[in-house]
Image (cartoon, rainbow, N blue to C red; front, side):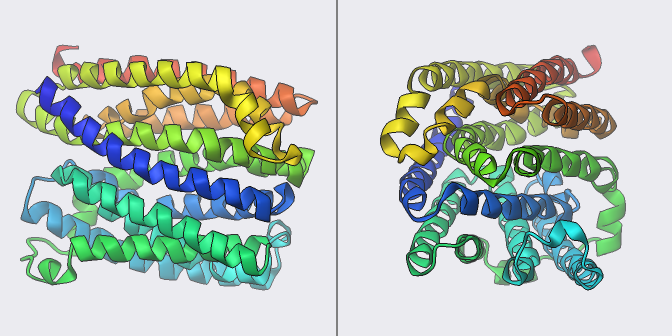
Length: 410
């Protein structure tokens, strides 16, 4: 199992690394087209897209690895796509009412950004579902292809639109168009004709009822997690200005995003192996420890690289207006490194049905984030408080997830 597990991780990592080279190169171009303020506003909009991308699926896509191979998983994927359609229409109605009420928090976004908000979130939810399906099936080549095409398309459209007019709306339109390409590639690899042939053994409402723990506990927990992930940019923009938010967004994009995707590559393999092991043995301790070892080694190498090269990287590859992003990357190192290790291993919570504990932990993380970014008087102090607190809470999560992996023998 160990060799097969590592081979699968390497296969997904290879595709992920290719997918990451594209946005890194693209970001070098985008930084010369857009200023920090424009990038900060776009990042705030993208934060809402990411949050809604979690909400629209009701977190049912996380159940795909738990479903049995073959028709049961295919039917579950079809049910999730139907769910996205229903929740998107409802959310669009809510947004329309909110716009009519002219609530203050929407003032900073242009009408164009608001109009494409729900379509972008729905496309993201669809691509997440297909990627989770590919990972659950062990189709890692298809998973890599979807990520590479989506990453390349987003960057290509953003650079192309940015050359026409360099404002946040062009960045958002580029994201929308690129995510659409990613979804179309996924639908080509998982053709709708095959979905139509699935003989439904249960209705959509039966599926919702059977997997109700995901919207009941996982959706609130992951919605809180998504909000917590986007809060730093929103709160920094409110307290320290759009330029500071743009610098933070750049550090997260150039350092945090690659580490997150590398971590997700291990998760893509871990969720299949650990779910299978738990169905067979009622524990997945060996799979957990294999993943922990891989994650620790990669995190150690990445942390050393960030500590040594973050500041000169931003100073040499970007113009002077972006140089402080390197300092921000150093301040966030505890968050990057420990979160990189703990995040994929948290999938054990879904396998053992302990989503309620995950919800409690996510609420603690949200509380810590709010305190860290609202109480300190300076920007650097707020980021350091946030980074260290984030890391310490993830240490607690590591202990909990290992305990759960031991199953009934724990």
